[in-house]
Image (cartoon, rainbow, N blue to C red; front, top):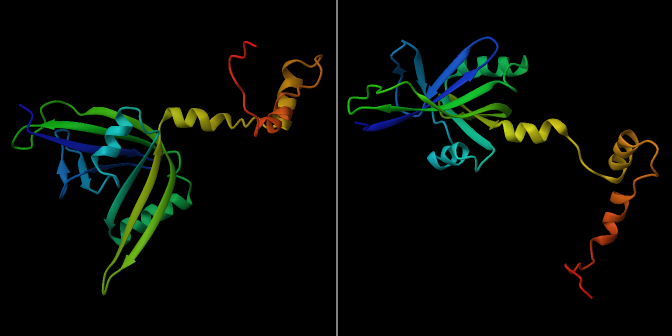
Length: 189
C-alpha cells in the first residue's frame, strides 16, 4: 500500500550524474545510489504536476542551501559549458509507511537545462548559495530549434528557395496593413 510518494530529480552532466530528492537529509535507494536533499521546485508540486501533464513546457527547479564547495563546483561546470543542455528527469517513487520503495521510480518529466541562475546569500558567518535552473521539455526545444520568425524578409527568402520561378512572395508585406482592420467572417454579402 502506498503511504508516501517521493519526488526524485536526476541531472546527467558530461562528467557526472547528480541526484536530488525533495525531502530532508540524504536518501539511499535500493541500488545504493545517494540522493541529496534539495528544494526542487519553486512553485511546489503544482509546477511538477503541470509539467507532467504537459501543461507547462518549462519547469523551474530550485536547489537551495548549497555549501561553498558544491556551489563552486557547479559554477566551474557552468563556466566549462557542462550545465546548459544537460538532461534532467523528474521521477516519482512510491513508498510504504517505512519509506521503502514499492517499485522502481516512474519517470514523469524529461527535459534539458535551458538556463541557470546563481544567488549567494551571506548571513553573519555563513555563505549559502541557491541555484535555479529552467528545464524545457522536447516540445519547447522543438519550437526553439527551428528559430523561424516569419517577418517579411524571412518569408521572401524562404519563398525564393522553395519556389524560385514564382514572383516575390508579398504575404508578410501585407500583414502590418491589417493590424487596425476588422475582418468579418464569413462575408456572405
